[in-house]
Amino acid sequence: MLNVRLDKLTNDKLEKYSEQHSTSKSSIVKEALAMYFTKEQMKQLPFALGQDLFGTAKSGEIDNSTRFKSKLKVKLREKHTH
Image 1 (cartoon, rainbow, N blue to C red):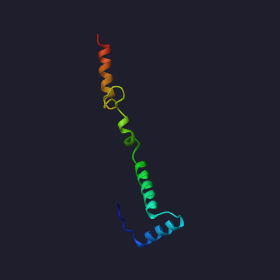
Image 2 (image 1 turned 30 degrees about the vertical axis):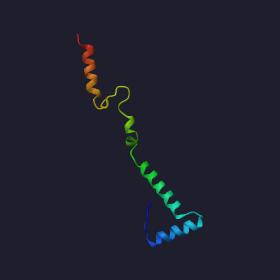
Image 3 (image 1 turned 90 degrees about the horizontal axis):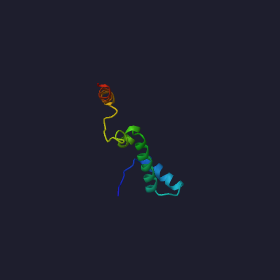
Image 4 (image 1 turned 180 degrees about the vertical axis):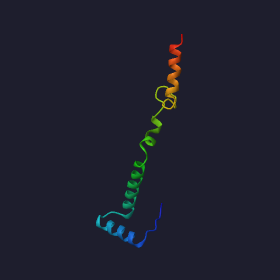
């Protein structure tokens, strides 16, 4: 359970809204918090949201994109050595 102290103006607005919409103040606060958390989650960078999905496909190695050139050079040298 959570108790929240509101300033008079905010409390009056909440009370009026609650009466106008025939709903409890608790329901309004719960819905507002849910909207707030959803909004905050959407602020995350797209990479952060999918980070666990990137970089290890098939090979299991996590540095493929940063070491691509050096790995390519090694493979080319191996292929073209006589």
